[in-house]
Image (cartoon, rainbow, N blue to C red; front, top):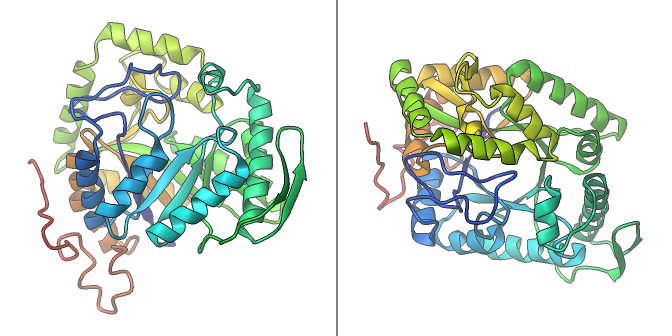
Length: 393
């Protein structure tokens, strides 16, 4: 099996010791954390993720969080190696300007930009940004957008006159080196068609393994029809502790902190989502607080109060490593993880789970992956000067 790649998450809506809302169906102002999403705190998370061996950090997009482009550009100045998986929505910025922004980001950050292309699953929120296309039209526009952007990154002079986008004589003065990889998710037919043509990495939310296997086969088949190969990634939360009992006690604490009225309100909002992926997430828990372990060590409780990715790996470090390996055997090579709070949970994963996967030959610390003796492959050995690991046991 190939080596695993791990990314962390930057909570640009704020962080807390309880689950902070956000994601699909959220309204501005509804998602808040006890820890403000300032560069100071986000920088702590980013530096810790870098030290622990995460390759990149996903930053979300939407009216409920800080802008991903601006925030991560600031964070490149307080990190050295960490890449930033910037979520953005085609149609809000012109394709030529987006290609130029990405090229500039790559030069100024020395190649640390990854792009998570989000078509947008909520027409109400899209209209707030001046976008009045239907869902299927948005996916069609995304395809046009990625076609233009990829051609520009390849150095072409582009003329394009499509149903949704038009450029004439477009070109870049300086090309990105390397061109940012495109991460793309979606569970609808329209999403699958776009992913097969343009995605480097297809992302799924944390569904049970059998459902993930079906998605992988679906996208792999569509990509093969285009003469392409696509890598696969999964977006999950994590609650990992030294023992299984400790991890499930933490999941219970989070569940007990969810007000029933808040759960009901969030679920009413998510019920109106146009996202097929969101519908599949809601089916995993059904809006209730019973039977939330939907597969061994896979807990659907996060989705009760949060849109988007709604499941968490819960268990001892060994159990979480086992589930990660199980997903990997299906074809998942990249894992985008997060936790509550994001700073502390990064250490639980980085010091508890990643070393186990290293011993199984599935992971190497990116800072030392090329070391011939492998002596610096663990987070502790790779720690940067001045960064002191924190673990609240």
